[in-house]
Amino acid sequence: MTSSPRRAPTLNVFPKHLGVWEGTYTRIDEQGRVLDRHQSRLTCRIIDGYKWHQNNFYRWPDGRTQSIDFPGEFSEDGVLHFDTPRLRGRAWEAAPDLILLQWEYVNEPGTRLSEMIWLLAEGHRCRVWQHTLQGEYKGVTMIEEHQVSKD
Image (tube, rainbow, N blue to C red; front, side):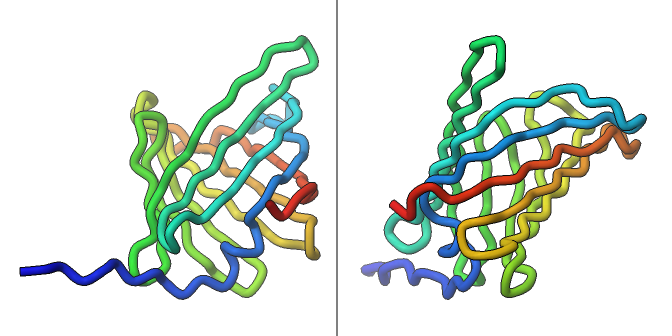
């Protein structure tokens, strides 16, 4: 028995987020205090029509850097599923200019995050993460990004 090739989902919003994005992450606790601020460079790709690959490169004012890969796969209904050693979750197109995500950190039991990615205009987006731990609100991360390359 031969298996048929995997059918790529129909995606309308995710393709608008491909390429390289640069911006600033600002983490704020539930009291409104800034906990962290750093620069970012994200590279987002779709491979073979259904595989997602994202690399996040972070740079802090003190010179620290971090690079993290986030692979995922789209199901035929267009939901992006992540299951990596770092996080587990899913993302989906919610409106013509909006992607929603829900995830948890694998090594931090009880964490849950929701994210909204809003494409404000071509090449300009904002993102907001809501952080919770054991069902209690723990603050937000606000991110503003500009697309520097569509490649």
